[in-house]
Image (cartoon, rainbow, N blue to C red; front, side, top):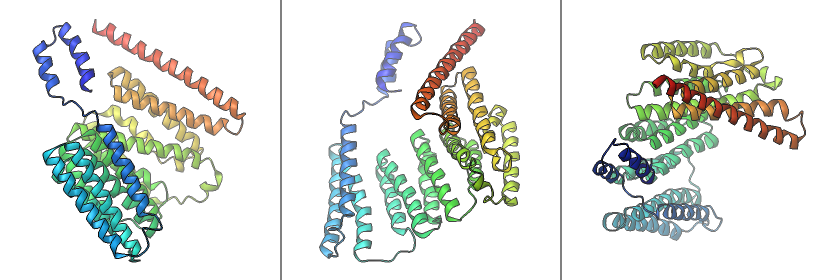
Length: 401
């Protein structure tokens, strides 16, 4: 909740004698007013960074010449010194923007130097150094933008290693789990949690591709991710990582429904016994954890982790499991008045409906009629969901009275 919204809500609390005017002022005093130039500076950094990267990748910049390397070294040292001075003496945000630009020039310059002198590399070690420098800068300045950029570099480095060398870089994985997880865990910030979760999910995709595993091993990895997230002691971190794992497996399920529609692929899927054994152990462990922590209602999440490729009519079964998951989350969210569950359930339901609609109607209908009917269906669904929400609220109010 931002400061303006909190102020509006606070006035209502004062009017109802929940808090006093002095208490409202003290609460509002805890919220720093955001710098109005924040978005402008953010876009300035983004555009300048893109400009630097574009220049680094240009043909002229790649012509071998030692002077270019010296210019790059001078540029990132100069940008860092200016940024550090501004951060300490003038404007924190302006200082951070120069430090970030210095960080971008450092990494891009390192890649350019490797290209200029045709240095042969056999792993993504430049990205490892780039990632570690980002970690060090965050340790010194503790600004969110530095952390975000460092996470992006780490994730891109893993993808580069997978695409270029066909392998999974375990050093990058260790940097993520040991270095970045340290700050994610201790700060317990929702943004950091979601960023970390996205990076974990994307790197798991690289792990499956690089090891040439069957695509369904992602189900196992996302299940491990989900179960570990549920065991974390910090609530904000638990929620962000658990939701990230659920979103990841849901997107995977959407892909799988299209994938399994093609009969050709069924004959090319190798059913590995090791997978089903490990999956069974993890599912049992998940059920035990849910029962012991008294979260039995969350067992519906496990619907998304079913190995449906083993079953007949697997594409249809996948859609049914997605519908059940989204509908149950909606009902639970409305009953518990949990906005996060309602939001996730609503989005999941709409995406599942859209997936099913595309599968069964795209080839059979005129394209203009396809979109028209799709829009009408969404209107009907939104009307139904809103009526359900109002009905639940009225029931809850009646129960309280």
